[in-house]
Image (tube, rainbow, N blue to C red):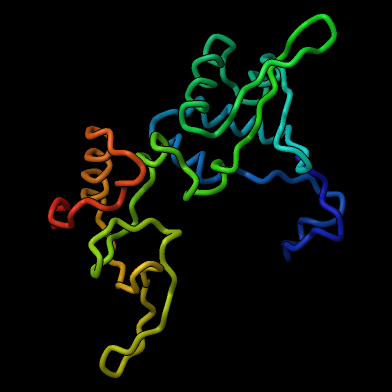
Length: 202
């Protein structure tokens, strides 16, 4: 958690100002964990971020502190930490402090960047659509908006960064099917989004 200064304050929200407290929430990681049903791991990650200074990726909360801020029971913390490591959101080191050792948690960049998810976390991205030109499944960070003419009208269109194709929506059922395919097949990261469009029923 950090204290806002006039120098870094960019929000126009009148409730914020110099001296306000804020934390950079790891929205991509929390969404992926929630979608994977790993609610306790998501809560634990949130508690860790609250202890980040902004000047370093490392935090040092005790298990008691993590339990207090996350609401996760002490008996469940070990499992939740293992989930965060498996998803590639944290790295845990044991450091010596006086006569004892304690955990040092590193909050990795993947917490804030969809494109840096590892193979496990990538299976829980939510496909937002598919490209009509290359046939790939497209995530929200992979398109931009462009105004295109359609007859007399101008339509705001999503365009795939890679090939320039138009991105169309997937309905909820199609999203579930694509996620099941990724997870059941154990699909590696380099193949995500490269399955033939015919495998996504209309």
